[in-house]
Image (cartoon, rainbow, N blue to C red; front, side, top):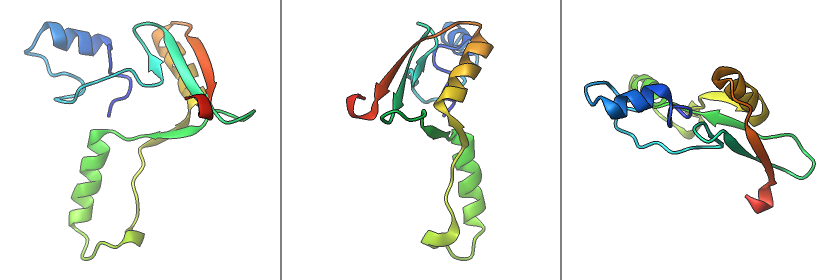
Length: 114
Protein backbone atom coordinates (compact mmCIF):
# COMPACT_ATOMS: atom_id res chain seq x y z
CA UNK A 1 0.00 0.00 0.00
CA UNK A 2 1.28 3.45 -0.79
CA UNK A 3 0.91 4.61 2.80
CA UNK A 4 1.41 8.31 1.99
CA UNK A 5 -1.00 8.47 -0.96
CA UNK A 6 -4.03 9.32 1.19
CA UNK A 7 -4.99 12.94 0.44
CA UNK A 8 -1.85 13.40 -1.66
CA UNK A 9 -1.87 15.85 -4.60
CA UNK A 10 -1.95 12.89 -7.01
CA UNK A 11 -4.89 11.45 -5.10
CA UNK A 12 -6.76 14.77 -5.23
CA UNK A 13 -6.15 15.11 -8.99
CA UNK A 14 -7.44 11.58 -9.59
CA UNK A 15 -10.56 12.30 -7.52
CA UNK A 16 -11.26 15.41 -9.59
CA UNK A 17 -10.45 13.84 -12.97
CA UNK A 18 -11.64 10.24 -13.20
CA UNK A 19 -9.57 9.69 -16.38
CA UNK A 20 -6.40 9.74 -14.24
CA UNK A 21 -5.17 6.65 -12.43
CA UNK A 22 -5.51 6.90 -8.65
CA UNK A 23 -2.15 6.34 -6.87
CA UNK A 24 -3.72 3.47 -4.90
CA UNK A 25 -5.48 1.91 -7.88
CA UNK A 26 -8.79 0.50 -6.72
CA UNK A 27 -7.87 0.40 -3.00
CA UNK A 28 -9.50 2.72 -0.48
CA UNK A 29 -7.14 4.95 1.47
CA UNK A 30 -7.11 6.21 5.03
CA UNK A 31 -4.66 8.25 7.12
CA UNK A 32 -2.16 5.98 8.88
CA UNK A 33 0.09 7.37 11.62
CA UNK A 34 0.30 10.71 9.78
CA UNK A 35 -2.71 12.61 8.48
CA UNK A 36 -1.05 14.64 5.74
CA UNK A 37 -4.11 16.85 5.13
CA UNK A 38 -4.45 17.96 8.77
CA UNK A 39 -0.73 18.06 9.63
CA UNK A 40 -1.21 15.75 12.62
CA UNK A 41 0.34 12.45 13.59
CA UNK A 42 0.27 9.87 16.34
CA UNK A 43 3.20 7.56 17.09
CA UNK A 44 2.79 4.58 19.43
CA UNK A 45 5.74 4.02 21.77
CA UNK A 46 6.74 1.47 24.40
CA UNK A 47 7.42 2.79 27.91
CA UNK A 48 10.46 5.11 27.71
CA UNK A 49 11.53 3.55 24.44
CA UNK A 50 12.11 4.55 20.86
CA UNK A 51 9.43 4.59 18.25
CA UNK A 52 8.87 1.17 16.71
CA UNK A 53 10.14 0.11 13.33
CA UNK A 54 7.45 -0.85 10.88
CA UNK A 55 7.32 -2.45 7.48
CA UNK A 56 5.35 -0.73 4.75
CA UNK A 57 4.54 -3.23 2.03
CA UNK A 58 3.10 -2.04 -1.26
CA UNK A 59 0.76 -3.99 -3.52
CA UNK A 60 3.59 -4.18 -6.07
CA UNK A 61 5.84 -5.83 -3.43
CA UNK A 62 3.22 -8.53 -2.89
CA UNK A 63 2.85 -9.09 -6.64
CA UNK A 64 6.59 -9.55 -7.09
CA UNK A 65 6.73 -12.06 -4.24
CA UNK A 66 3.78 -14.07 -5.51
CA UNK A 67 5.25 -14.15 -9.03
CA UNK A 68 8.60 -15.37 -7.67
CA UNK A 69 6.90 -17.94 -5.41
CA UNK A 70 5.09 -19.46 -8.38
CA UNK A 71 8.47 -20.46 -9.82
CA UNK A 72 9.44 -22.41 -6.69
CA UNK A 73 9.32 -26.21 -6.90
CA UNK A 74 8.18 -26.43 -3.29
CA UNK A 75 6.86 -23.89 -0.80
CA UNK A 76 7.51 -24.49 2.89
CA UNK A 77 7.18 -22.31 5.94
CA UNK A 78 10.97 -21.86 5.96
CA UNK A 79 11.01 -20.68 2.33
CA UNK A 80 10.94 -17.07 3.42
CA UNK A 81 8.80 -14.13 4.28
CA UNK A 82 8.12 -10.74 2.85
CA UNK A 83 8.56 -7.22 4.17
CA UNK A 84 8.53 -3.94 2.32
CA UNK A 85 10.44 -0.86 3.43
CA UNK A 86 11.38 -1.13 7.12
CA UNK A 87 11.75 2.24 8.86
CA UNK A 88 11.38 3.72 12.32
CA UNK A 89 8.35 5.94 12.80
CA UNK A 90 10.69 8.73 13.96
CA UNK A 91 12.50 8.57 10.60
CA UNK A 92 9.21 8.51 8.76
CA UNK A 93 8.09 11.58 10.73
CA UNK A 94 11.19 13.51 9.61
CA UNK A 95 10.70 12.44 5.96
CA UNK A 96 7.04 13.46 5.97
CA UNK A 97 7.94 16.92 7.27
CA UNK A 98 10.78 17.33 4.76
CA UNK A 99 8.66 16.23 1.81
CA UNK A 100 5.53 18.21 2.69
CA UNK A 101 7.28 21.25 4.20
CA UNK A 102 4.76 21.07 7.06
CA UNK A 103 5.70 20.79 10.75
CA UNK A 104 3.39 18.13 12.15
CA UNK A 105 1.63 18.29 15.49
CA UNK A 106 2.75 14.96 16.88
CA UNK A 107 1.21 12.98 19.70
CA UNK A 108 3.18 10.08 21.19
CA UNK A 109 1.08 7.45 22.89
CA UNK A 110 2.15 4.47 24.96
CA UNK A 111 1.27 1.12 23.39
CA UNK A 112 -1.27 0.46 26.16
CA UNK A 113 -3.16 3.66 25.26
CA UNK A 114 -3.11 3.17 21.48
